[in-house]
Length: 203
Ligand code: ADP
Image 1 (cartoon, protein in one colour):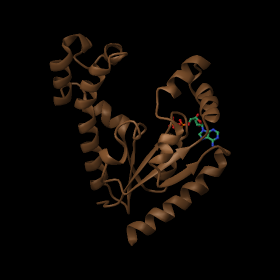
Image 2 (tube, protein in one colour):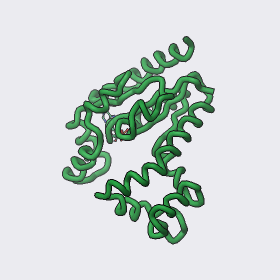
Image 3 (cartoon, helix red, strand yellow):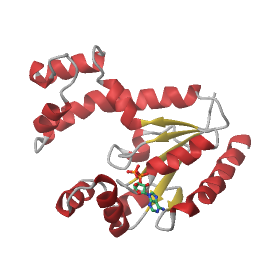
């Protein structure tokens, strides 16, 4: 049981997944909001039934799973549809993350929430003891996104612009993990944070 839960966030391609892995390597359970969001509307789930009730069977694939591309098209440029979809998914994600972290073994647990700043921040997640932001300048974010996903600059810039700003993320941070240095510098930075959180858990 972990009473202490740390929220981890950062912009796209800031290095969250890399940091998640380093915490896992240190024996810390990491619950992933993206995975929880997929589970929330998995085939046969109550969440998916609510999505179908709201949007119709047109958002189902032939195998009765959610047709994610169709759903994305439906909420693209329709803020009300997006709000309805998020009202179905977000509470389930929050509950799943909270339960997974509470039941995790280890001195503390991490809830990795890419869109934490966008999805209500601290107010939506009052059970997060601290928020750790993986922080890079937007120029570095863009370079890494281009390299990782092999997409064109216009799409990468649009993906970054669709998210909260760096300043909005920094505003909810208790702890910062600057990641504009070399990859080799990350394990020591994660080790220092791991020490801090173990001390907090023991206190
Ligand atoms: P996120 O999960 O935040 O989208 P990733 O962890 O996938 O980001 O990191 C984005 C890309 O940048 C990946 O290809 C990753 O290997 C690389 N990366 C992460 N940190 C560094 C770093 N400090 N230096 C160079 N590349 C990095």
